[in-house]
Image (cartoon, rainbow, N blue to C red; front, side, top):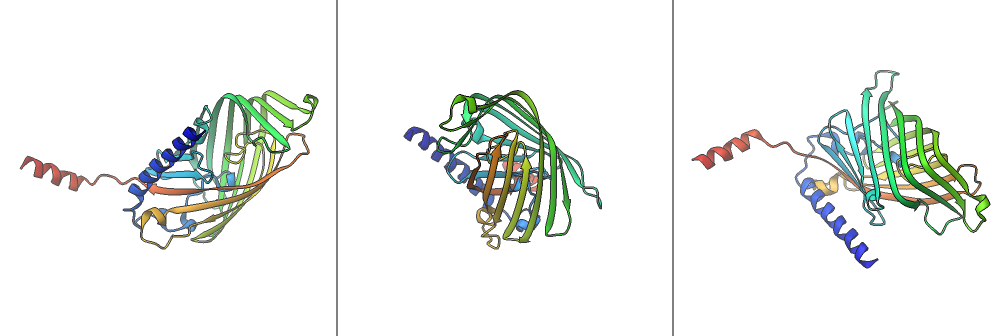
Length: 297
């Protein structure tokens, strides 16, 4: 256990050093660092949007309990790949891709297709062992969704997502009950719906409300037949500083309430993460040519 914690701490330190190296030299040449009102939202409060990162933009989410986090990469202006490193530490293959289809035009929303494949090698209880209900998953899990986002005003966004999730093994178990109360679902295709509202109040503060049925990207993630309500607060506490690693530092705090399948046992908790966004700098060709010329001379 101690050795595993040491690996976690070392991993977090390496990530922080990489973020610091990128963040120290960042400037306000892009809206990326001007606060939450200009930020590209991917999964606020665990919900879904139709937006994607710009090419060369990166985001790293670090869970507060020091488990490994999630890395997002803007492959192009239309495609963002998410690498859930926290899943990999649970011996799971997991990758997410979002492709923007169209941009908003008047009443027509920004649309994106999102797909997430996950394979759990070993059974995993997603809500821990100290709760009234256990949620076990195993094997293949794959959701496909169509996400829509409307920017209603500069401060308000409306998001809607619909799709399906295939789950190979899903088991809801009421703790301390007989096996007859277990609810087993195998090789099943279930519908997903998510409705979200974003209030971008200030450059340093935003509020997000989400209601969903089915799989979500975060907070007991990739679980079909889950009913969830969540409220999330996001903060950019150092948005006015000049030091990049603090300027692009963000916090999300979320409270969620869930029920699973036909069980009446609720599960609620508070969670959150810290995150950074940064833009990889392109190499300056003039600087490179000068260095090569100096070397030849």
